[in-house]
Length: 257
Image 1 (cartoon, rainbow, N blue to C red):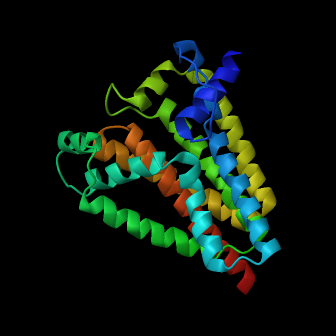
Image 2 (cartoon, rainbow, N blue to C red; image 1 turned 90 degrees about the horizontal axis):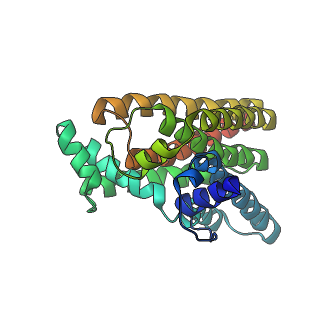
């Protein structure tokens, strides 16, 4: 029963998918991060179904691209995008670390956040529009799963920038050994699946995700002294975008060879 509650907590926290509501107890939160990647799996399945619908009913490229780009936001309710916005504001403030942490907590959106989100959206739209092969879309969907695996690993492995907030709560309550084992196992299986689907496209997408993960560790530790809930949202958003662009480039390379 505790495992089932952990599943419900993960989806209640990280998605807008309706879940049974109950009081969250500490013991129920210990394994929630194990199920965090499955929100990404839902996004991947919906991408594939949307691709099938577009092919079946002759939906145009523009509609395919716009709806495909909106699917992650609709499923998560913009949860990770909010962190992306706050982190962009903090990073581009060029203020001391203490001030950057204050900016992360500020609910207002600054100019840098708007500019970076617009830039990110244009790049994501462009990359997604170039994904025409079903197996490439499968790789991208698995990449959405992988981005959350890596984010979960970071929560229980990277230092926290502050001893408060949602991320610290989940990290503090998590059974770290079990969570790490579950996430590493899921990550290995996901990487294997991506490369089995398409060795070249999957390999390039995996490399993009891992490089983004390394950048996330370096930048968050340098700028904030660790990670926060906002930087975790920044990573998931950034990683998904990098995987989409990498997969689109890989597909184009394979089609032109």
